[in-house]
Image 1: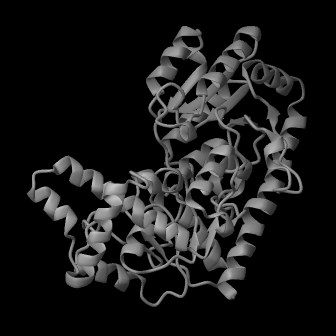
Image 2: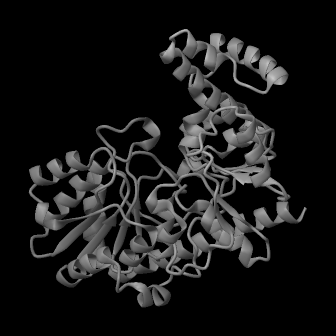
Length: 416
């Protein structure tokens, strides 16, 4: 998911590890070729196809296929639905590296439901005798399709949670109270390792390398036109999720950024400024309506959902990266993409939450609310060189804490 393991795989291979990546039906913009300007990956990236093949069932052939795919590997690192599949096949994780919903949502469907827990015990007993599902088929035969669907979700959660609890390590930063609560529910504090995901592959994503691969990127050409016409370009490609967000952990509060940016535009009529954002998330239309209401439509460029190689190219043309204004974070794909490209960062952040986690935190533009966003943009106009240096300092922090230190942790476990 999010190209995370494709990036980790490349870093590990650079360090002499025979790392292979198995895909489980990723979205088009999360495919490996969406995250590289070359195609030198076919020999170590494989399509597992466990989801499309219907491996959510306990078909003995499905179990055997999963075991065959994993045969010969000394260490398994997993995310997404992979823990579920692996646990059903009797395989244990060495490292679980969650990307989000695989930790905060999937393990908790009908969590601790007493009836389903009892049925599951019956299922396990019957499967040990016959190798087949019993409860699911029985419920469907009885015409209880809704209950069968709910039980299927419970089974997904049961195996996902069990796989996580049985993993040797969980590489994850518990970066806000929501995550701490989830760890408490699963009882995995003893497995947690404060290791960040090295999600951006720096050998490809630097200005000099990118400049040789922009001709075919439509979004890059659009942003380049905006760059030529504006004094200030703010880039914001987070999901739009602030009014219809499905849960608290996906709340981005894009409206705070939009309102702060609008206040800045209206207070600086002589400054040509553009907010570049992506038509991605449940509140795209809601954000468009707000932008029109605030009278800044001509100051906003909407881009389609993009591949990372397009995003990274576009970031070479931006002045500021705007992340998330709903929850405080110190990790995340959007944040790290900005750091990789040396952009000064605007985001909500409560520094007191991360005391003891790092020896220092990367610098940010103060932006906890609309007024601070407007003021920070005003300050950028006065001191652009200061904020460009802030971007360089964030990049140095990124290399140290997001690339080098995490990879040292991976290598330490692999070599042991």
